[in-house]
Length: 105
Image 1: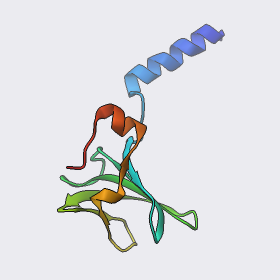
Image 2: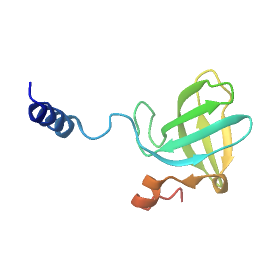
Image 3: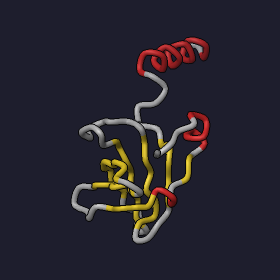
């Protein structure tokens, strides 16, 4: 198969499947006792109004969970872990979040 044919197949698959299969991270914070908490605007398996989030710990473990804003905090839930309450002010927008002008308000 020629290189141009391969590129055409990849481009066609991208158009059919979309650009990203994983939710895109719009906000992130670094904290203690976790390494990073990332928030997306995708619902995924989360029940509305919760959205998909990702947590990584200092030991390298990673977990998917769900988050929702509760007053001045973000409430994040992860299987087999304690819930996390993180103040809104601890989060910063990612480049994509800036581009989309996303807000946690």
